[in-house]
Image 1: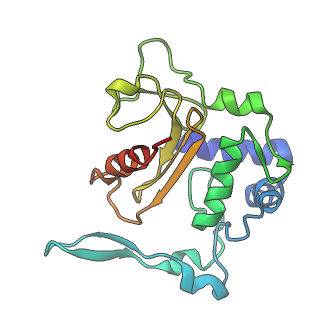
Image 2 (image 1 turned 120 degrees about the vertical axis):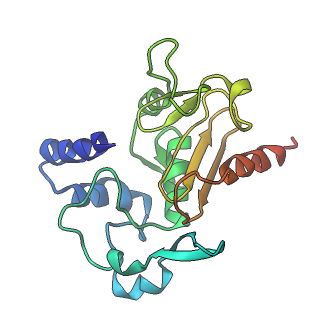
Length: 205
C-alpha cells in the first residue's frame, strides 16, 4: 500500500538523505548487492527480465519491456521499483534469516528482526485473503500452519510482489526460498503454493 511509500519518505526525513542514497549506503553496499538500484545502467540492460501475462489466444504476451528501468526515476518509491538480481535478493533474505547479519556485517539487531517477524495484528484478526496468517513489520506471518494454503512452519515470514514474485523465511527450518516468475496479474495462478510444497517436501533430515 501507499503506507510503504510514506515510510520511504520518513527515511528521507530522519536520515537527511535521498531514499535511494540511504538504501545504497546502509543496505546495498554493506551487503554487496551490486545489482540493486532503482534503475539499471546500459551495460546491464541485457540482463533485465521481460514481464509477461496471458494473451487473448491462450499463450503469453509481453506486458512490459525493460525500457522503463533504464533511466533513473524522479522519485524513488518506498513501495516498489527496485531492480535487483536473484543473487542480491538472496543476500538480503539471508541477512534477515540470520537475524540481521550477513558475512560479518550487521544491519539490524537480533531482537529487531524477531520483532519484525512477529504477528502484530489484534487477537482473532487475520489477513483477508489468508485466515492462517497474521502480519509482522513488512511481511505476513503464518500463525496457524495447519490451516495454511501450503506447507510451512509457525512463524514463517515473507511477502510477494505484483508479478508473482515471492520470498519466505522459515526460522524453524533455517530455510529461505525466493521465486521470481515475472508474470502478471499477481497470484492468479497457484504456483507459489506448489513451489512451497516442493521446497518443504525436499526436507528429509
